[in-house]
Image (cartoon, rainbow over all chains, first blue to last red; front, side, top):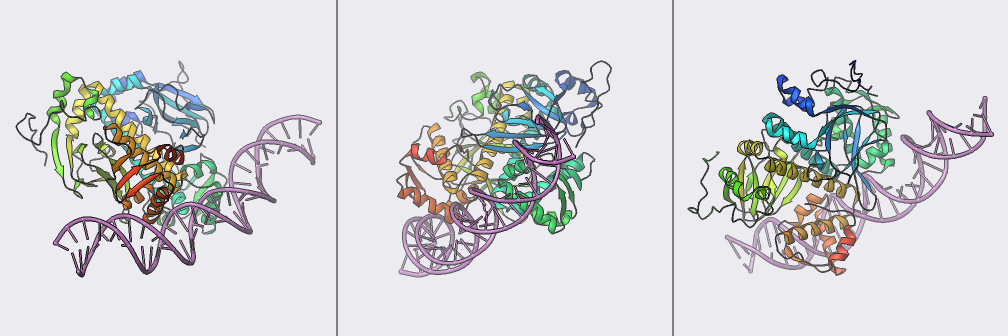
Length: 248
Length: 248
DNA sequence: CGGGAGATTGAGCGTCCTCAACAGCAGTGG
DNA sequence: CCACTGCTGTTGAGGACGCTCAATCTCCCG
């Protein structure tokens, strides 16, 4: 479980500079020259903490900000009138949430912390103002939103064409590569989400997810105990996942 | 291939001003004050025509521009390494395509004309430059991209939770409302896409689409002959579609 | 009129869902 | 200390929705 990043500033314990953030190569700062980073820091509110299960924002409430995950993990979901939930994504440190809400005055989805999680808040009006002045930052916003659209397409592909095994293999590989990007083990990690979240996200029944996990285990592809997962044969998993690259 | 910008006066019959375009209330101009419209017109190349089946752009080729559909209709799709196609959206006049490609230097998907289609081209570099100068236009771009993300989520929801009947009902209703938005009949229209496109988009087999169409017909919900469709009982269709709102 | 693509209809089967029982584990309280 | 409770995850049996395969029909266009 990713430990919350300890921030060692005498003045404000919750504040830390984007300059020193280990995620600056994944997050918004990556688009910006070192000497312009202060302008981004001026608008960001860093280090807000949420406990497991707490909402970072809720669907249909006033849209005020986008958030970058700093530590922990987040799931976003939309709720229909009939109360059904559809998880639209899992977000790990360095990833930005709230991009799907920039068309409205209210959030289009709900974001919930899957574990103890800290985020950096980017108030939308200030962010828009800043991107208007900084072409690289604007470009990066377009980049991120476009990436989000592509992720949606990949998910649609996964849901409409792939079997349960293929979907789960793809998700495991996606998580693996995202852990690796943060210099963590890509073969040995702890799932931040419950089986039911995986099932919901991938359009499967919980029982099916469970069954596929044990099947993978029997085939020697993974070792799983609860949320602890070890990928034993990544190549075989990629073979199973085939052409489906899934950005949870 | 980037043509020098054509000036937009009444010299060419293919050219028409955004000022006079009947879609200006759906397209990019809607974000802009009348007196600033010329700046958008300066960068747009209007009235490029494509025959049915022609590509407006192709996946993996150099990303140069976004396009607004002016007349006709377009489907976008992604192709996997194994050659499978997943249609990611249908686009009607006034709608913008190419937004999913703004993260890369190459197109993330392929856009194909479903019928004889004309589009307006917005070269991406000029568009980005312009949105940097015009906050309302930037905001509108964020709006459109965010909308696209939401559409993806709605589609994922549809694919993962809904039956064949629900999916098709949702698609018919989506098309209906989009025809209506253009002041055309919302109950009597011609499908721009083949059954196989519908099937691919909704994650179904062609046969299933066909069966559902006839079932709807037997139930008196619609009347369909080939691509001609008449919605006889919109309320009932909405009941079938339940909570799934589908923005094809 | 013939060829071919698109659309429809039928039969059989497979994947995954549903329903149900059970196991493991943590927290609670007697 | 252990029963009790609740939550999460696992396993089994049966059934349904939609896919596959195949034949037929319709319509368009040469």
